[in-house]
Length: 220
Image (cartoon, rainbow, N blue to C red; front, side, top):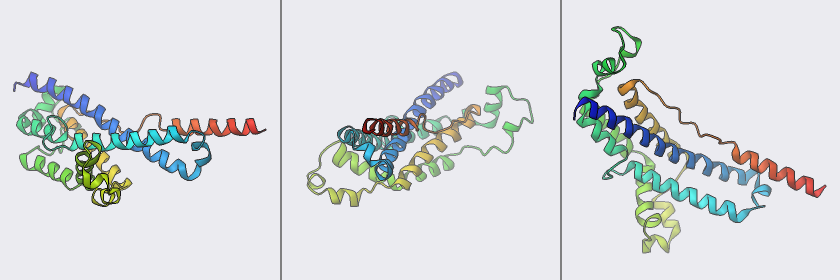
């Protein structure tokens, strides 16, 4: 692949992976917020229990499906495919290429102390993904329940929860690995780093506050 082809493909791949990682992380953040609001905003939640129940279920399914797509080792896109693309074109991600791409002068701080990308370092990133607790859980849940109904898990939901646990810490770790991995190669490409904060995360709080205020006003 020529330099110009690589740069365009990397730019596009980064753009769309960034969108899908945000989708995953945003779903996790809002899903967790709904769960936590059941503890201290239950009265407001119960003004529209069917709505919040549907949203909660839809978010959880999205988390599983998007997590599995992003971590699918055999997927045509996603992080494993992205790592293969990087491995096949790592000659275009050297410090010298970064300097050429950005026009940095010799001695620029962005060029100092950069660790070269190697086949070994890329394989280490693959192993980071494989070692995640959520990696196995996403695959089981996608293949055996959310994508297709497996008889064993369909009739035994407790076994599903036991064989494929979904814990907050595991979801956060998965999202952090996604974001950090894309950022690492992004900085090697052109120095760009992306923030992964969930946009408008306070929207639900605003809605529930307004609902509570409206209830109090009507009661008065």
